[in-house]
Length: 312
Image 1 (cartoon, rainbow, N blue to C red):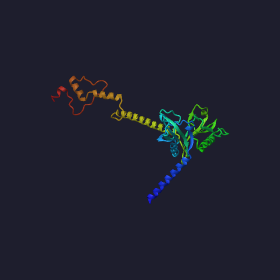
Image 2: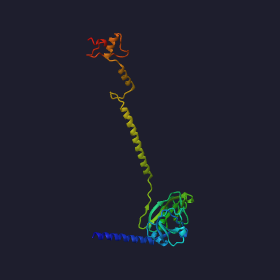
Image 3: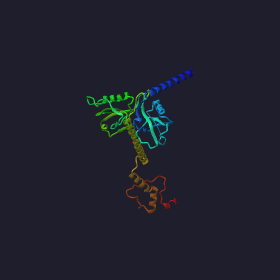
Image 4: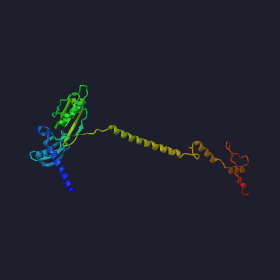
C-alpha cells in the first residue's frame, strides 16, 4: 500500500512537470533573433548536442524553464551542413567576440513564464538599442518625486513577456525591452535612478538579488581588528609585568640600584672574627674603615690572633 502511495506521488509530480513544460513551451516568446540581425554570440552556454537541427535546438530550450538563449551553428568549413552544434543556457555578454571557428547560423533569446529573478542595474549606466522602447510613464510626479513612477515602470516590464530589462530616468522617463548595450556614455545615464535586468521561468515567484550589507561587513571586520589589537596589548603587558616581577627583592618590593650597592658593600665588609685577627696581627691601631660600624663580637668564637690560636 505504501508503494502504491509513493508511485502515485511520483506520477503526480511527473504530470505536473510535463504540464509545466508544456506551458513554458507554448509560451516561448522570441525576444531577440539571429534572423533579425541579433549577433547571438553569447557566453555561458552549455553544449547540448553536437549534431542536430535548429528546430530541435529551439524546442529543447523552450521546454527548459531555465533556458533563455539557444544557439545553433557549425564550424566555418561545415557551413553547408544541415546539422550543427546546439548550445543552450542563460546567455551572458551576447556581443562578445568569438575566438573560435564557430559560425552562429541560428539562435534566439526567448522568454517563457513569469518573472523569476531580477538583478538591479548599476546607477549611472544606461542601456540602449533598437530593443528598447519608451513607456507612457512620466519622469517625475507633480511633487518632484519618482518613487511611484519607478514602480509603474517596473510593472510595465513585468507585464510584458518580451521584456528582459527596464530603466527609469528622471528626465527621459521609463524605457523597457531588451538590450546588450549598456554604457555610461549614453546621455540618459546621468539621470538614471533605477532599473533591473529580468529573468523569467515557469511557476516561480520573483526573486530579487540581495544587496550586500556593507555596514554589517565592515562592522565584523572592525570587531575582529579590535580583538586582535586587544590581544596584542594584553600580550605586551603580560611580558612587562613578568619581567618586573622577576626583579623583586627579599622584602617584596622592587630592587633598585641603591639596594644593590648596599649589598655589594656588605659583601666587602670584614666579619667580627676577621677584625679581631687583624687587630692581633697588626696591633690595636687597626680600626674599622671610617663611616662603617664595626660588627659586634659573637659569643663562643675565638678572636685570638692567627699566630696565637694554636697555643691555647
